[in-house]
Length: 106
Image (cartoon, rainbow, N blue to C red; front, side, top):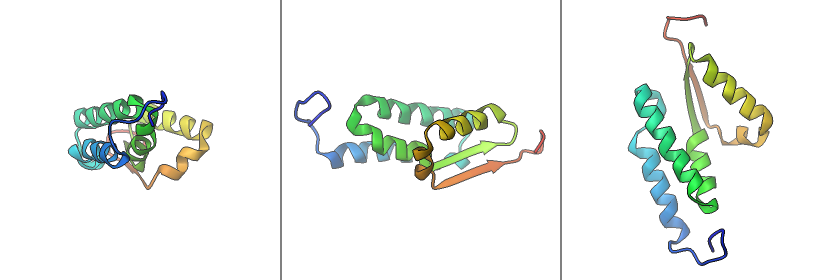
């Protein structure tokens, strides 16, 4: 059933496979350019907003592997605030990487 009470057009396995393909299309975030990471994030956010049924799988893809660079303080601060406000999101994080580029404070 969809979130409006109507039968879903697709079995659960189909939309989960679609979201996984979106996730894998770009590869792991640690090897992507900033532009590619933004496209990946935007695509997965769109999946999460499609309908309630797509949200859990999309969240797992969004939070499963997080990559930051030392000079990206704003994004790290947003993550910390998000995890403080929604502690259950912490369980979705399988890998958290923070890289130093040598250009800023560490």
